[in-house]
Image (tube, rainbow, N blue to C red; front, side):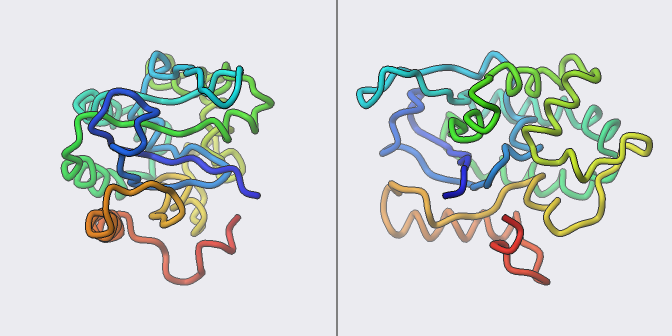
Length: 206
């Protein structure tokens, strides 16, 4: 079974209020690069649940903060990932369409892939404030881009899978949606902005 992460918008500040959330994008075996640019290391929180005594890690922030961070971090993104510039306008457009006040990343399954070491994810999130070898390596690991990154040229290899590791993909797997009409509308909006490469089906990459 694949380890997945989900990027959600929500009407509630509680990341567990899933009935008030809308799934924007999904990722498999990674937290995509541009998702990471929306959050800070202070946004990595642990919440207790009724089902288990172990706390579950989430990413949670306001949409306003996420928008501000993404714009502020464009220069850092382009300094260390010089060929992602074409992706930035579509992400700004996606963020402009989010009307909910909160943004949440369901990332527990990805944290589990780091053998439960949340410091790896925290270091990856700290990259945009403190870019160095440690935080860059953590970011490349968590985003799944390590094998596609040229450190000398600071570029990502041209490969269809890189599209997903930067953005994530639309999904129908996450539940619950608020209602069928909104589900369709949300998916169509995201698909129009974050289009998938057409030369291969997405499932061949995972």
